[in-house]
Image (tube, rainbow over all chains, first blue to last red; front, side, top):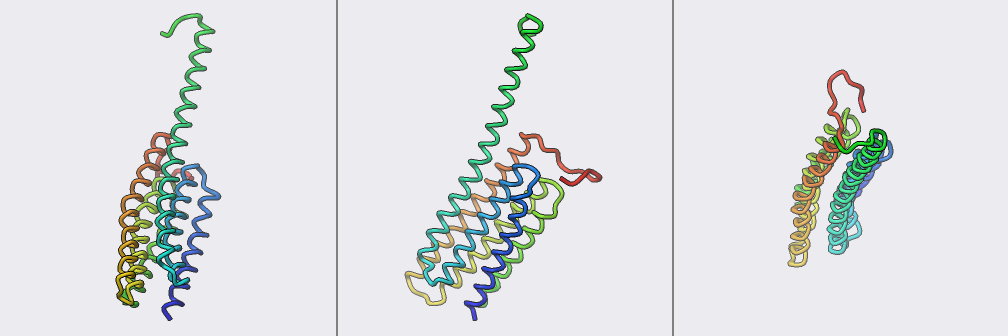
Length: 111
Length: 107
């Protein structure tokens, strides 16, 4: 009886993961996609524990769940840092080229 | 013990469903983050506590150690999930996303 309950809970969790994949695929901005990935990762950590109960080897699946939670956290922070840095680099490059064009057109120093 | 664990897991699934509904339906990025950041950490902690209680049906030392390890995951999620939410919000502020106001188009 309890096994069936855990199985049904795992299936519901998989359906919720499918629903939040909609936000990952069709999110309007890139931050939405990172948020969707974070949510899917959190649900997967829980799902691994439920699968551990179903396979009757919870002691092994707990370690996998800890590793997955750590990896999910690091991946979110890394992706966020990456887009932040790319934005600042783009802005710096644009300012540099604009400044160069200004200097060529007016033949003057920085005002 | 099984009944208490089942109640915990059901409550966690309910909050997961609410979080997914918020992610799908809210109009802009900040409100979606509001739905995802809080309900997800609470729901995962509830489900993981339910799993730890379910594991303690036969009370042995090995099962107790596994349950303590499972509770360590909840401690980690309680630290990590708000940090990830904070990093996402800060990135969105720096990238210059406008918050949604009434009457504007949904993003």
